[in-house]
Length: 385
Image 1 (cartoon, rainbow, N blue to C red):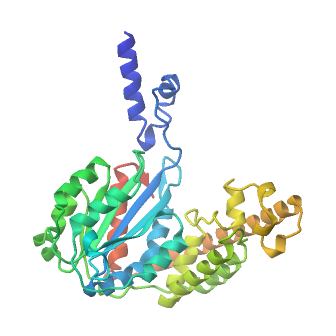
Image 2: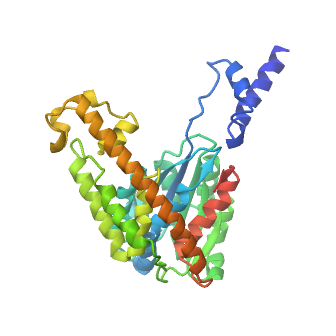
Image 3: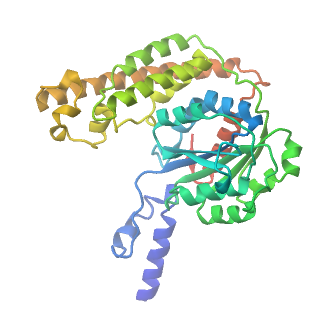
């Protein structure tokens, strides 16, 4: 009888790993022996590894990634899992570039899993193209080996690989990489830059099918379509106000604040509409800067005001008492929250305007491909929008 009871409780624990099972299995988990139970993370993550071909013919793909990053982030910010808002981590790889190490398969990890959206933007803008050999199986396997995918069954773990050469090139068989991906609960989505049928004949669809991922073909040379709205100028004005709520501290504070400004400029370099999309991202819960912004750091309890050294403080707070510093940070936090809420209100109107004026023929290749695949696969884990 004891064996039967223990088996039943173990099954209850396993079932609790789905998003909707938390409340149903709480009793079973509490009764389970603490030494034998596994702690389930309280937060879910959407983990996306973006593997981009940076050979000569891929300039259009890189441009789309730069121009469409913020709309992809914005769409992910609307996701919910069990009424909670999942965190986002993005990793970036480039492959197929002659500048890269041949012994490593012409592959480079540009950025490990990160929630620093400014850093992600900076690294995207650093990419350049040069002809090379594109080894799809090897870059997939490399990302599986190097990245910490975690073991939380609620996490949505996705690889997006984009390119235009046969999927079978290189010493690592993509089928072996797919087997490893399935073991880690990682879904591989393939984006062929070219004709849909050509991608099928060069095994890009087969590469996605091996992990039940999505196969997509895009015109990577098509310019990104941004629809201007009557709300853009006001949102951009709020962006300037939003930037003034950041309180840089520590050794990297000023450097990171400059990075924030530079990425604003990079976004605006494509269009005002793209800069608006970035501003909307900055008003979401996915834009985190606790490593250098005192407001975020205090709010997330990553730092205690009493523990901050005088030399780590910005000039406006030097010589101030702990009480004064807390009051200053609290006021900036309230100001930021009000601005972010206003941006979100304007964005709701902006989205409605875009939906009403969008032409059917418009198709932002990489953006649409990724968002459609993410939403399709997220449903399997009860993520909702």
